[in-house]
Length: 291
Image (cartoon, rainbow, N blue to C red; front, side):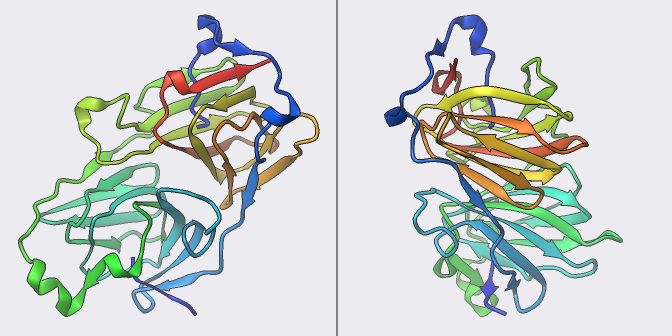
C-alpha cells in the first residue's frame, strides 16, 4: 500500500464459572485509548486515500504487531499491481464493490465481505461499483515502505508465488456468540479456533452487532490487546471507577491494552457495528468476566 504525504469477542464463560472479583486500582491496567483517524495519505499517487489508526507512523507508542486503517478508492480507480513482501493483508469491505487480484486469481467482493491475501502475492484492488470503495485494512507485520514492491522492481519476483485468497462472504456466517444483552458476536477470522483453515495471521477478527442499549459488562483479555473499530453508530468503552470511558464514533477505534478491565455499550439511537481485532488471537482461555 504505497503511501505518500499530501472482540470484543467474548465466550459464554459465565456458565463455566470463569468470573473474578472487581479489580483493585493496580489491576485496572493502563487505560483505554481513543484512536482518531490520521490525516489522509495518498495511495499510489492518487489511486485512493488511507487514514491510519494503528501503525508505526500513527501510534509508535502502541506495541501492535499489525497496522490498521481505512481505505477509500473512488469508483473506477485501482491500485497498480504490487507486492507487500512478508506481510499478509486483511480487507473488510464497508461500501462499494471490489475486484481484488491475488496472483493468478481475481475475486469480487462487496460490503460486508472480507478477503485475506497471503504475504508477497501479486495484488491489486479495483473499485468497480457505482459507489466509492471503502474498507478496513489490516497488515501483519505492520506496513513499511521497504516491504512494498511495484513497477520495474516487480520483474525479479515474477512467478515466485501462487497465493490463494481467503474469501469470507458473510460476516454472520462464523461462530455466533449470544451474550443475552442485545449483542451478537461473529467470528470472522481466527487462526486458533479455525485451525483447519490454516490462516496465516496471528490475530483474530470478530464482527459485532449491538442493538440500542446493547452492552457487555466488565471483562478482560488476559495477555491479548484489542482494537475496537466502529463501523456504524457509536460505542462507549468504559473502565472501572476512576478509569474513565471513551466514546468511539464510526470511523474511529479504541485500543485496549492486554489485561485491561473494560465494558462496552451502544450509545447510539440505532444499531452499532464494529470489528474487534484481538492480538494474539482470541481463545476462550484468555477471556475473564469481572463482577
